[in-house]
Length: 216
Picture 1 (cartoon, rainbow, N blue to C red):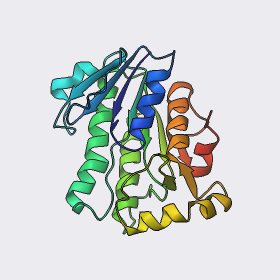
Picture 2: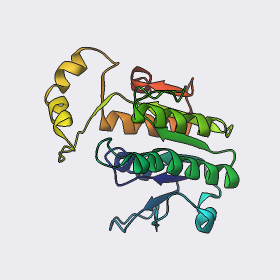
Picture 3: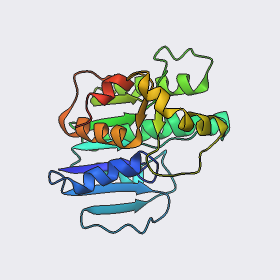
Picture 4: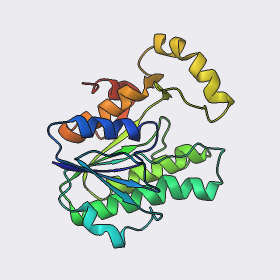
């Protein structure tokens, strides 16, 4: 089995990559990155690209793919609305379209987010654009799964992007105690994405509590 990942240097994508590399069922992992990571592994093929909106020169990388994972994301408030939309919608659609053209039978897993608005009418850019990406990929009629995690607790230490995330990290034990709707660890999310990418799920849109059911 061959897989392809976009966003493998991020908090979740990096863990999805690790799951893929350690799996006996996967023979090759193709990772799209902006710059070389220095990671070496016999299964890993790292492709450096500066254009995640057009894969015309890299279409061959999407051939013979069984599962694909789109984990690219940016935090709202850190970039302009234009860049946020481009990263959230345009990059995801370009990735999915290239996959559809070269490996139409492949499974694609999209890292979306809680609150994604399928009506695309939300005044919140995050909800509107996440919903837009989900809808457009769904319209490609592929084996598609959208993951909508709530607060993602970063298992590995990191520099939090803003004060809000610093507060959420402190209150994670409380969020976890409130039930399955409110939080998930980065390790759990990556493990669930990996499992669904290989074996599928009962529904296309997976909310936080659904995702936790696929942590195998």
